[in-house]
Length: 81
Figure 1 (cartoon, rainbow, N blue to C red):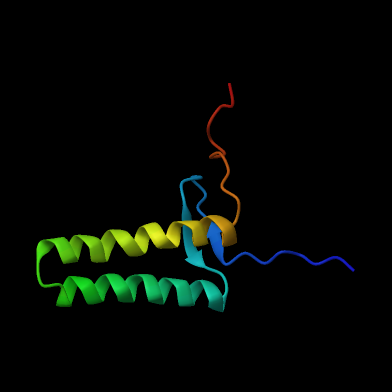
Figure 2 (figure 1 turned 45 degrees about the vertical axis):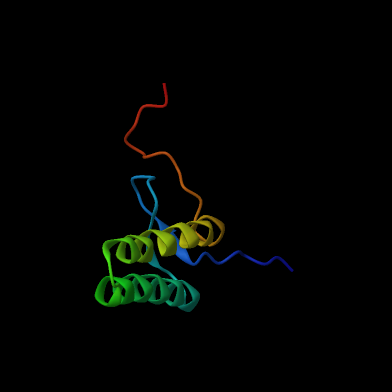
């Protein structure tokens, strides 16, 4: 019996990153990511906390997108030569 891998995030057609979540696990990652960013933007005491509150969740989520997202591909309209 073969098991088809189910991706959490859809790859963008441009080949640069991932777009919307495809599964509930992907939505949990999105809610956690944007919730954390929103929390630190609202409740951060100074600019340093606000910047860390934006960049740290993004950096932490990138490996999740890479492992559980569809493989990124070259845009279809580019000439391979």
